[in-house]
Length: 436
Image (cartoon, rainbow, N blue to C red):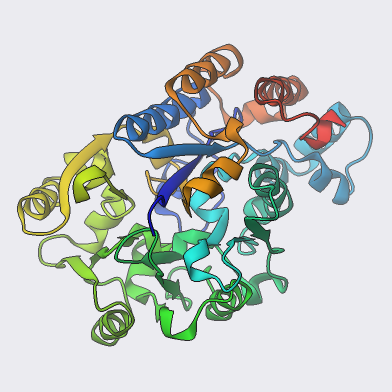
């Protein structure tokens, strides 16, 4: 069990980060639809978060932006001609479709995949299943390229197994690790996997299907007695918790969540305790923190990370600090007798305005020391690499971007030039379709 550590693979925010308001059920995204974004600030904020985690002693990695605009989707929808002509025709005939293929939503790598670490799998390898993200067009087109990126970074078949995204569209809708948590006495010990699924609420549809979670558990070979399936509360879904990580997060032996996370709270907590008797549950009562407070502040979309010496830290958005009720609850948690004894507030406002907090921006991958050595080292960070990525952002990203700017074919060429420079910086070769 020694030598294991959790690596956070953050999404490197792409140059087309914009506010098109594409995701039904995402309250922040809808609220800010049409606003002017700052791709440069967004990427800088994301890299600053990665640097902060690195300075805390965490192992930090990243996933590259996916190619946007996604021209294969536009061509598959009947837009023909040169790349510039494809953009021009889509801008004229279907600007809503154009906005979808420009989305930088792959930045939220909590939705990239579900991961089972080697202590939990029958073959002793790390298993990945990319999410099909079938509920929304702008996200469903991510799966093939996400799978390619994961295979590129975790390439060694001696350590890593890659499954295909689930078939079946919305019937097996899978939104990845945003609806999955792992509990274990320590990272290298066999873990208990908590899968949270939804059923449509009165306001918003559920994106994660129970049979999708069950299929991922089967693919990864997870033991039945170490797997728990729990239904998300409809009240949470309708309040804007479109993924369960908006109302709860698990780390090692701690489950940090809102009282109204699960549809049948007592039954769900009993099942979790039965599978994971070591778990310590830290719960926010509704009288102290309402669901509206939880969703607007993204209190539970924090990263809960293990530090040296057995400590745990909450990595929170500054919005949680600015809300007096959530700040009071955080202070109470840190002062109480539980493993969470630090709260660190970071500015990820550009992501938050699209409905993605600190936890949305990262995919958690528990790896042994040997497995970490088998990872493509270009995607594991140190201070020097972050400096280089910041310089790349400063050179290639716009300070301001409006949805109207997406109509200009010159912006497509600008975005592709940025990704081409990134591929060269990381030694990725002809990774992107437009490079071939």
